[in-house]
Amino acid sequence: ARSAAALERARRLGADSVVRLTEDDDVDSLARRLGEVPVDLVIDPVSGIPAAAALRALRPGGRLVNLGSAAGDECPVSSAVLRGKSLHIHGYTNNELDPGRRREALLTVVRHAMTGALTVDYERVPLRDAGDAWTRPGRIVLVP
Image 1 (spheres, rainbow, N blue to C red):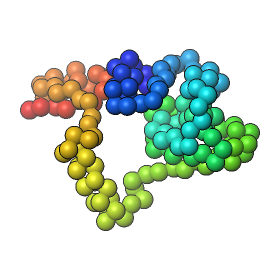
Image 2: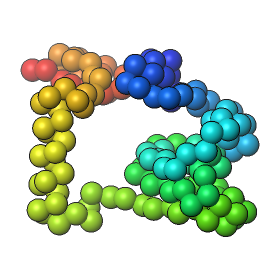
Image 3: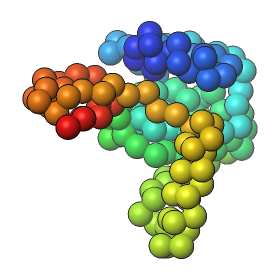
Image 4: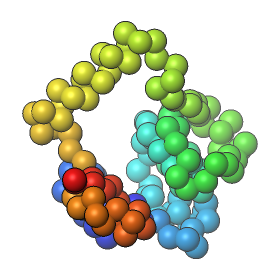
C-alpha cells in the first residue's frame, strides 16, 4: 500500500505482512522487501513494478491474477523468473461473465457486505462540497 492508513487497515484485516510502496521502487528493491517466504497466489490489482516484484515472490508453479493497473499499464516481466519457476499469469475481468454468473457474483458480494464480512472504507461528504471532494484521496460518498 502507499499510505500508512492502508497498511494499518491491511494488518487489521489479517494480512500476514505488509509492504509500503514508494515512487522510488524498482523491481529488485521491492522484491527484497516482499520477503523470502514464497507464495502460491498473488491477486494483483495494480500491475507495474509491484506485479513484477510479486512474481519473484511466487513459488514454482505459482499464479498471478491481474485485476487492474493502478501502478501502471505495463509490467516488466523477467523471462528468467517466468520460465525458471514455470509461473502462470492470468488476466481477469468481470466483462467476461455471462449475466447469470455476474448476478451470482454480485449477490455473493452483497451477502458478504450485509454480514459485515466485506467492508469498504469511505468518507461521507455533503453534496455541496462535491468539487472539493473530487480532489481527496480514497472513496467518497456524496450525501444530498
